[in-house]
Image (cartoon, rainbow, N blue to C red):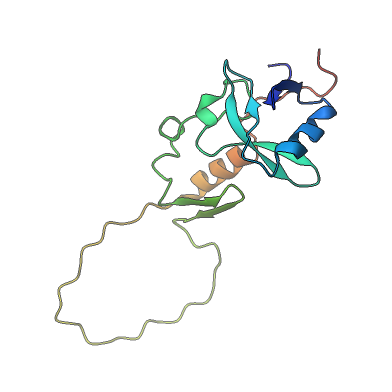
Amino acid sequence: MDQIRYFVRGRTYPSGDPLLQDALARVYDSSERPRCMCVQGGVEMYVAKHAEFVIKRMPGTGHLHHVACHSFEPEGGVSGIGELMGEAIVEHAPEQVEIRTAFALARTAGRPLPRGEQADDPPSINAPRKRMSLRAVLHFLYDRAGGTRRCRAAGPSR
């Protein structure tokens, strides 16, 4: 894909169009959603405001985008992340993700546990929670940073 195109309020804008910021400002506080036009019919996106207005992928819609689109993300079952979602990876918001690791992130001097009397109750059986290995954490961070997406040369598009 040479250039990303977005459909906002009845008009299609290339990603570099200076008028796109004005169009995004008009839909920012409304229920209208811009559409990424990487596939026929487009895919709904949402507008966030940082230093300027930014179009972002709706959660769970990455697989609906064209594979060459910057918003494409394979489904969790295909990428291997699906089995970790909800247990080892908890996404509270697009900018806030909690990960549970199988290793300590900090090392502190430990104290021995106090010995107590054993209770008469039989121990309960708990299934172990899924945790991420160091390798899985690195793969997750690499993917979130965009390292798994195809690079595009900078410069004017045709």
